[in-house]
Length: 60
Image 1 (cartoon, helix red, strand yellow):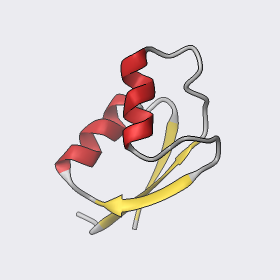
Image 2: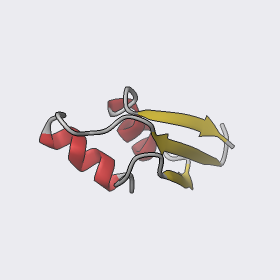
Image 3: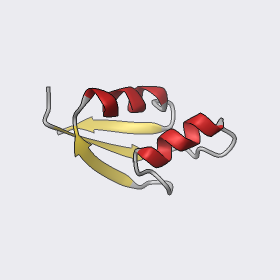
């Protein structure tokens, strides 16, 4: 498993439920095309799994 994970918001959270929008905010994704790198933990993986239809994920 990679030590860090990089993800980018590629589709807007507008029209999604409050839980999905809160998850995006928790991941640090507040604007379109914003890229964030975090430590690859089970918590982050679960959040990315929940919003997988809105983000692009690259393992480093």
